[in-house]
Image 1 (spheres, rainbow, N blue to C red):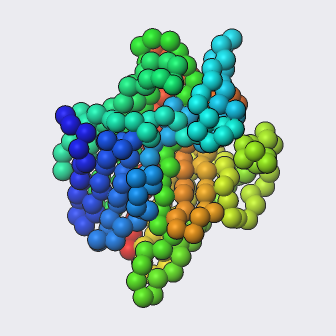
Image 2: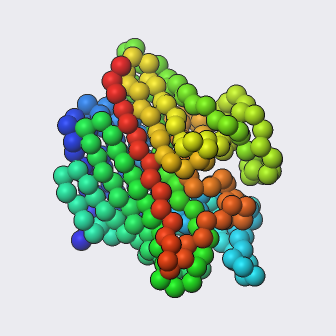
Length: 265
């Protein structure tokens, strides 16, 4: 199939998926109201085969040290798939499946599969990384940019509510120091631990509540921009290729999912 944009619909919810622009969700509209920041860099993009920053663009697999392009100097950030063209392998009115084959600068072969499933009050995103050759460390995550405000005469900024067991202490280089601290007040560009699974509520007062949930236990919250806030479930913390690697093997893929559920207020 082609890499043309895909529109999914269920009830009054509509999602646009762009295989040709990093396999991202470029729009989520509920009752005609857009919840995601618009623009080629925004929407919600997949972070794979790593999430957040990888220190100095280096990671180790056994005795081998690999170097990645420094696209956020001095680090490498957010994986390679968000800059790639994905292939549509299946689509229907409310579901789409995309794939992307890992290529340089990632040093290992593998395939990433994304599934987007839309219901009347929820969007579920699933992702898997598999290989039939060499095993390698990897991470999966999602980077949505939710609009801080939804527009309208009585519009108010979104409110974030969550309870975390810990916050990864952030160093001056924006990477975790390895220490865990009690959660601190924002603004944030920080990773939080939720051992029972990610559960973050975004509330646009008087308009809509949206919950981001996942079985994974790490989430990065980024709310330092005036236009949007980000709630990023992921399979490990920033620099996780080095500190908490999840191994993809020919027998065991890396899989994760997140669901966004909304209700009107």
